[in-house]
Length: 205
Image (cartoon, rainbow, N blue to C red; front, top):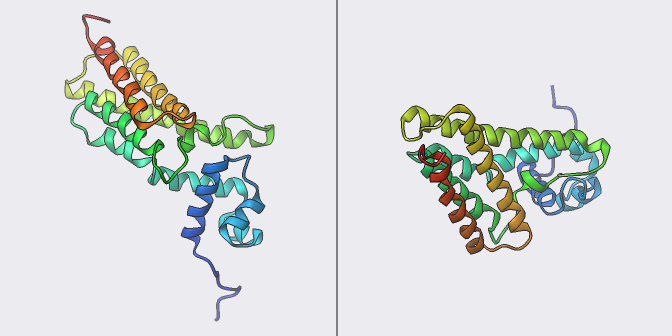
């Protein structure tokens, strides 16, 4: 039996990448369905058929973002041999990503929908959940450092250190959006890593 319906005349992967670029540039509320249709070069009905609602499309976009621009900082956490080196590499990878010449200068996860109308509460909570996962990922890497013996802190201290460096990551994004250069962000990272010994040394805690 022949397949029903007309075949797609567009590349869904390319269309999703275009949607990512538009959401990244304008934010969730600043991007309308008609904006998306125009940028993606397809009808609104085709967006619904392939990706679902605007919110569903945005969730797919964020999944793509996580595996592209969001991956280098997470990879840095995974691959560095010590907790300190992992945090340092994560911060530097973040700064690299948010100052790229071919993308908006901020982390989409941090600034795509920080505030907005009541009906978009689900989107803000969706992003908040991903940010909470970022904190959990940093904490897990620090806990690995404790298990490996290169970090000696209590559970409460580990929580605080993880939240501190997660906050630095988020602050870097705001600074980049407001015009800070890669060099200026590196100075912030240097300060943040200078705090490492004070945060983790038994003599100073």
